[in-house]
Each structure stands twice: as C-alpha cells, then as structure tokens.
Length: 600
Image (cartoon, rainbow, N blue to C red; front, side, top):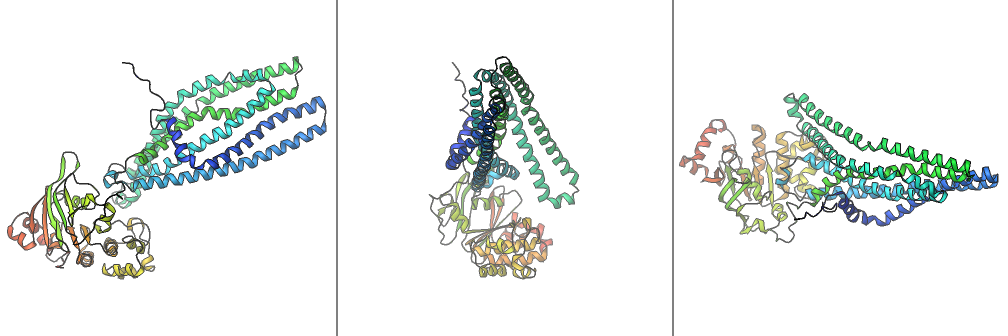
C-alpha cells in the first residue's frame, strides 16, 4: 500500500497553516490599517530605490555632462525622497504598533476568558505559571509573527523588488550574476529551521519553570523562611535559568550559522559585480553612473535580502509561543456556557445526594453510591476521617466536578440539568483556606454580591463580627488586604469571607472546616458569625472538631466514600459507633469549646 505523502498543511499547528490562520482570524479585521501601512511601505521602498537610481544620474551629471544645475536638481529630489521615506517609515511603524497592541490585548482577553470557562479539575493538571507564560509570551508571539510577516512582505520584499528593478534596468547581465548566490543560501537556511523549532520549545518550557519556582517561592515565602529554604529555591531557579541561558545560546548559535555563509556569498556577489562593472566602465566605456547606481542598489538590497533569507528561521522560533497560546484557546472548554439550560429555581433549598459515585482518577472512587438529604433551613454536618470524601461532596455540589453516577438534586431538580451560574448564584461557600483578592476589605466583601451597596456591605460585616476590627484600621473599609489577605490575621480573613458570604444572601451555605486553623478566641468570634450566616438557610458544614457541630440538626458520618452513620449528636453517642469513637478521642481537648452552629 502506497503511503500518502504528508503535506506541510496537514499539521493544524504547522507553520504554513498557523500563519494563514493568524492572518485570516486576527489580521483580517485590520485590513484597512494594513493596507495603509503597505502603501506607506511602498512609498519607503520606492524612495530607497529611487535614491539608488538618482545617485547614478548625479554621477553622470558630474562626470559626463558637467552640469551643476542637473546635480542641484537631482540632489533636491533626493532630499524629497529621503524626507518622504522618513515620514512614511514613522507612520508605518505607528500603524503596525497599534495593530499589534490591539491584537495582543485581544488575545490576552481571549485566553483569560477561556481560562475562566475551565473546571477546577483542569487546573489541577498544570501549574498556574504555565498559563501566565502562555498569556504573556504566547500572546506576544502572535503579534510578533504578524508584524514580522507584514514587515518582511511590505518593507523588505517591496524594497528588494524596487532595488532589483534598478539593478536590472542599469545592467541585466550583472544582475543575473548577482542572483546566482540565492539558491545555495536558501537550501542552507532550510536545514536550520527544524533545529530552531525544538530549541524554541525547550526554551519556552524552561521559562515556564522559572516563573513556577519564583511564583511558589514568593507565595510561600513564610514557609521558605521558616524552613530556611532560600538556598534550595535559589538552586531550583538557578537550574531553570541555566537551562534558558543554554537554550538561548544554542538558538543564537544555530540561527546565526547562516550568517558567515551569507556574508561569504554576499562578498562573492559584490566582488563579482565590482570586477564586471569596473571592466565595463574601463574597457567598454560604459557610463560610470550606471555602475555606481547598480552597486548602490545592490548594497542597499543586501540587508532586506538577508532578512528575507532568515525569515523562516525567525518565524519558526516565534511560532512556538503562538502554538502554546492557540492550543489552550482551541481546546474544548471543560466548563462551557450553559445558556441553553434552565436556571435552578429554589423553593425550599432541599439538597439530596442520590447514589452518587465519583472518582478523580479512573478505578479509584472517592464516593461510592453515597446518599443523604440535607433538609431545608437546617444544619447538616459531615464528619469523619480525612480522605473519606467530605470536601468532594461540596465540590460536586458547586459543580467543580461532575458526578460519574447517580445525581445531586435540589428541590427535585438535578443540578447537572440546570445552569452552573444559577446554582452558584444561590450558594455561598466559606472554606478553611480563605482566598482574598488584591484590593480593599470593602471590595472583597462586595465580591459576594456585585453591585452591593455600602449599607449592605456594612450590615454583612457587622453580622460577621468584622465591623469592629475593620473600623479600628486607619483606612477602615478601604484598608488593603495584601496578597492573599496577608495583611489580616487568620480570624480576620475568615470573618471577611463570612461577610462576603452573608452579603450574597444565598439560600444554601457550604462550610468547609471554616474554623479549623483558628485559635480559640478567633474561633469563638467566627462561630458567632457563622451562626448569623446559617440561620434559616440550608447549611452543609464539614468539621473535624466535633464539638463545633454538636447542635447540628443532622450529622452524617462519612468514611470510605459512604455514609456509615447519621443522626443527631446524642443519638449517635448512644449508638456507640464510629461517631462516638471520634467524639471520645476529641472530648478531653474540646470540653470548653463553643459549638460552631447553635440550635437555630
């Protein structure tokens, strides 16, 4: 069977298809600006070629016609041509820069929009620094590819055509001799391209590793300092930097291998032109202006010709970043828009898990046909050993992941049949690891309800027992929280997070170890805030400290992905089962602790 030869257009991220796609999808919308830039480039190229041609005429006026007037006239025209070239080059650069900036901004918006439509599971597979690299380097590479191609065609190619036209007009035979050097040059350049692709990909990966290490070191600076990891992190960064340096040096070495060969061929071409041209002037009495004009055009054409010869090398280096960007944009969204699905409509906010099975990895189920009911307006607590599946339940309720089997039902509506947005709009979540965004306390509380009024923000803060400590700051609600809220204590961050949940006024509350990392005093304040948050709402709370959920309306003991016991605190103690065992282990340390949720 004959194997069909592979075409260069078969690879969706191959150079040919990728460049065509970039122009049709991103460049075509700016065709009017590109057309104007091309016109300006044509003016610049024409001015360059015209100057080369007129220089020969000036020589003839000086040495053959002996005409001062002719020299003055031609010199004036050359001034006009150079002025036109300067103005055209200026505006062409401005136009191309504005196009590049617009495309760069658009790609950054597209990538971030795509990332916002990915699930939590999507991010668990990659480091966040990789997405930052794609956002910056990838989006920048797209604009550089477009600018490089446009400049190569509009500026270098047009200049080369104009100058070659002058050369052919002045001496066709000499032009033919000069063109003999081109074929071996392009054959040499083709061999370099594949090596450049591999090196550019490795360099992108190493740059990502640098960002990853720096990001982790800065975000975990307390851990770095506490464990004296400065030298360890420095070694990791140094290793990645050394790899980038090595790859950069290899790229420089490989991409410039054509340089000596090009210079040698250029020298041969120029020497041949000089010898042949000089012979014609001396032996055949040809006009010296033609010879000067030809040599000037040839020398001016050398640089754009060299850039065009390197175009394939430079493009393939830049296309690596463009591929990295488009691979993310092109991949199917793991959380696509669900505008076609009905909104979740709550009447009682009754939450049910019906034989739910779920696994993060194949054949390793975390939940195994789990079923329970969280009654509306009541507090349901999930307790049990770590790894039993408690936090997974909350993740599935928020549809961070989709169940493998069974269904989660709220008021007789399967949540997977309703839009995610409507589900999350009616759910408030407070976790153990509170995430606060860069900005002020006011802004972080207001994130719970976009457009929240000042009165709503203050009321939520008071209900969360946060108002007093907020107003004790000199800037009050305008106090910056710092990166990840590091300007606030753990208890203060938790209360801001509870205020954020309160201002949302959601009918379903999900609490995941909301006091686990707090001291006793902070825990008491947070507990009181949570009482306000839970009152009259369907609440599902996860707690390792069993004394905090003693007064929950229903306690579910989860172990090995199933509910092994359920009931109220006293009933479960009388059963003398798993809950009783857990409670007695903690009882001595927790006798004096206040409950997380009162009997509301």
